[in-house]
Amino acid sequence: METAILKKALIVYGGWEGHSPKAVADILAGLLRQNPFDVTLADTLDAYKDLKLDDFHLIVPNWTMGTITDEQLNPLLAAVKKGVGLAGLHGGMCDSFRNATEYQFMTGGQWVAHPGNDGVTYTVHIGGAPSPITEGLSDFSVTSEQYYMHVDPVNTVLATTRFGDLVMPVVWTKIWGQGRVFYCSLGHTPTVVQMPQTLTLMERGMLWAARA
Image (cartoon, rainbow, N blue to C red; front, top):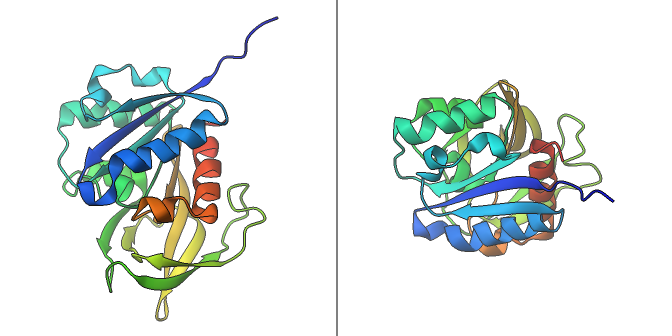
């Protein structure tokens, strides 16, 4: 009897410690291993140039701020363009390398501000395009940072929040070359990541990106 080949995922974590990158990486790794994935955890951006990224079905960047070299970034861009999935959350994916515009084009957005900082209570509205990622979910409230972002207009928006009359995407997908990209702006702390709604969105989003 043949043994099923596990999907493989790479989680690269680090950067600003205020987002608890190791703790969040462990939570996301746990979700993937339940599905089941073979998960590789790396705490250096050199993983993008030292590992054969085409061997993975999914890459999860979890690196807030910092800088990335062309030698590190270019293999990541190429792997996703060739079909490797990309999925992440909060600043770990969309406030990573503020001067790397090609990275921002790939992820579909870049953090700009979080008015009121941590502790703002706001509503996440589930809506937009029908998707298995949000199927069966309802609007919910969260007390955390509310991300105001620059957002690629080609994104497929799955959930939003409001800044007054302004509607701001919270969850989206997009296609980069042949790769599927998923993002969720929730996740300032491990506690927010472990909310049932966030866990559901991240689990479904990572599986969608990996075509699992």
